[in-house]
Image 1: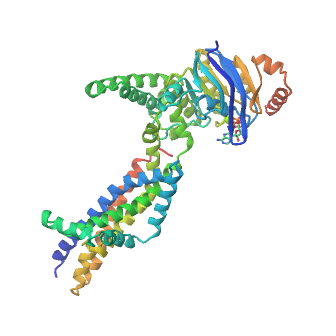
Image 2: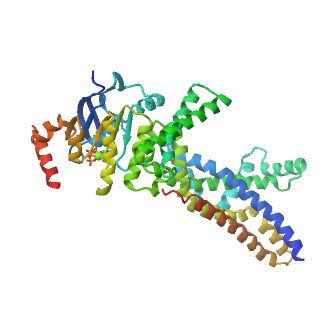
Image 3: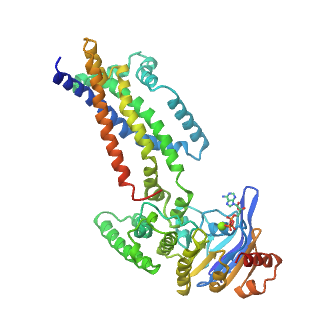
Length: 232
Length: 266
Ligand SMILES: Nc1ncnc2c1ncn2[C@@H]1O[C@H](COP(=O)(O)OP(=O)(O)OP(=O)(O)O)[C@@H](O)[C@H]1O
Ligand SMILES: [Mg+2]
């Protein structure tokens, strides 16, 4: 098997990896913010409920959450059919997308899991902003919403970039878990070569991750530099 | 009727009665200094006036309008806030904005609120917003020049000295054109050599005839600039009077003891 063919196959798998990464990131950030607000809620029932949810999500392996999201709805449905399996068929026959159901199940599990982690980072960031910032906004007649978006948010952003970059880099590599419910991401592709006794593509995948994480690191450094004009 | 009337103002934090019935009045253009030892409720008094704390009882009226107690919807609250301005001990500037933006931010947001309230949309909104922003920037520039920071408008708080930061905070408070400007120990967080520049700015405001309440440990300054001195002890106004009455002829033993101690420190 020549290098170019393998590279091309791996790239196809890596596209799925990247898609999973990007969609998870885009959806988990707003959901995480929402969860963060719920865990800081003044209503103790809301606060308690969401603290328990965050604890449960952070306390169970992501792989197990993948299995739960993928299999549980089918087990609970009266027909006993896995809805993601049906989604697979639907997407394949209507849009020609392969394995779409599994990808969506993965996305659901990832978004929930990462939103829980992000929410704790957001909460920490928001709670670290001094009371004086809110009070200054208040005596200047700003509304609560204005204080959050115009005063607090950018300070929180600056504070959470280092822990967020950690989580985001972890997410890149966690996408490899998706193969356990049949998503054909890059390692799964390499594994298919391995089952034909061609092992080296498995090692070759490392290069893809390294380049991607390298680019992300450059991006985070850039953002940190961009925000270095103020101190919080 | 006095411009500001505070009657029997009370505030508890749990079991601690911090303000146990504070009453005083002040006229427009007057300067009132609040003195007293630590923990006697001076900051709490200012915070109640600025709605940073909700009093547990009492009455506050400004210019004949009762502002506490009042039905507090958010909107009303922010309208009331416009009557008071507050300069904090530790500045509380917004770190991500430069000096000019710190001053214009709240003005511009107030414009947004007004546009929303008047349900103005589209091109008209854009035009009015642009006009207001330009006007606000002009005002902010003139305020910053007045506090001596004409050459620091583009600097971020982390690039300014404590004294400069506090002067930006003063300009920021002035921008909202409050009826009454409150200072809570505006120089306490500053190195001694920087207090002078801030006190000079405050003196300038006083000479303009602004209505000012200032909590301070700078006895000399309080004596020089105030129309009235309030001496607070144990959550009440122990003594109130002209600087001469309080500093030269204090009646209460508590006041005498406090002033003697303050003298010692100098
Ligand atoms: N949020 C709060 N919760 C509980 N107690 C408080 C709170 N704020 C103030 N206090 C208490 O109220 C009392 C008065 O505090 P305050 O800050 O008004 O005093 P102060 O006269 O300004 O003192 P200082 O000269 O040290 O600034 C203190 O005993 C303080 O511990
Ligand atoms: Mg105080």
